[in-house]
Amino acid sequence: MANVDILPESQPILYSYWRSSCSWRVRIALNLKEIPYDIKPISLIKSGGEQHCNEYREVNPMEQVPALQIDGHTLIESVSIMYYLEETRPQRPLMPQDVLKRAKVREICEVIASGVQPLQNLIVLIHVGEEKKKEWAQHWITRGFRAIEKLLSTSAGKFCVGDEITLADCCLVPQVFNARRFHVDLRPYPIILRIDRELEGHPAFRAAHPSNQPDCPPEAAK
Amino acid sequence: MANVDILPESQPILYSYWRSSCSWRVRIALNLKEIPYDIKPISLIKSGGEQHCNEYREVNPMEQVPALQIDGHTLIESVSIMYYLEETRPQRPLMPQDVLKRAKVREICEVIASGVQPLQNLIVLIHVGEEKKKEWAQHWITRGFRAIEKLLSTSAGKFCVGDEITLADCCLVPQVFNARRFHVDLRPYPIILRIDRELEGHPAFRAAHPSNQPDCPPEAAK
Image (cartoon, rainbow over all chains, first blue to last red):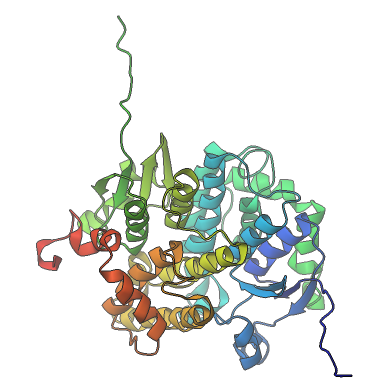
């Protein structure tokens, strides 16, 4: 009998780096929706970055994390992945029903995912250079946080948009962590700080935290 | 009788700059859906950038274009605005029905909107400096286009995803224009070039082109 190659139905695989805020967004969404998944760590620093090796480039041609193998497909780009989860796994919705609130969630996600994170991620900071990188990261994070605080002043309830956790919260919490890493003064952003505090103890957020990742180096673990 | 302040039902107002690729995305989507709109030009260069003035900061706290006033609300962030149009104006859908194709559209939008455009926009190039800006812009556009060409190799039909125009095409065409502006060698990206050529004559894309905007300076108009 021929050796028939039947793949067992397997759980999703998340290509992730412990400190990547984009990987972290997806980890939170997977946890909130209680979707079991395996993590395949991709080190962004080992051997010049494992994300640039030929094998991983086949997974994600942008050569960055995250990527998610799910339902027989490989998906890239963190916000896009979260919307796929939202559309295919309706349990524990992470988007409001109301069309205006949905727009507000997307706005906050896009300010972070297009207006802040890309300008302070590792690959850009390498180009900016060691000497200037802290000031550069602070500049772009501060600019974004000023805008986000303003948006939240009309959209926030207990969380970013109203009283339910949404994709905006999945994006905000990792970005606050990055802001602290670059020693951004967060005192001018009381709403951001309040929401971040509200969520820090939430099991789905806690399990997704960099310090709780399998590839977190021992010296950085809590 | 008291002076009752009844606002007439007005058409949407798009805060736009002729050469802004993010404004351009929204102009295409509005045109494709045949939504009449007024343009309020915001010059990104006059007096240090009109987007930074107090009045406009109230419209868009990110101090950038576009912003869209529609249905009594002010929306910011170009991709988010397009999804709002898609959710509220179902005519001429710009998203596929199929959940995987939807993910592919979002991926391409996000690669451009988070992975390419933010790194080569005017405000970042000012920070990079006159001397290095061309090389910097080329570097990030090339990195993104390599990935997009790879994604398109499995998703594209006549357009970015299949044979219907989607939001991915609304993002791609303005980014190709930017690539040309920074003299990126586009020969390695035949699928991108083919789709761009396919769309350049489309009335909705042509009307949204920078050279056809009310604030296009005469020397740049076609």
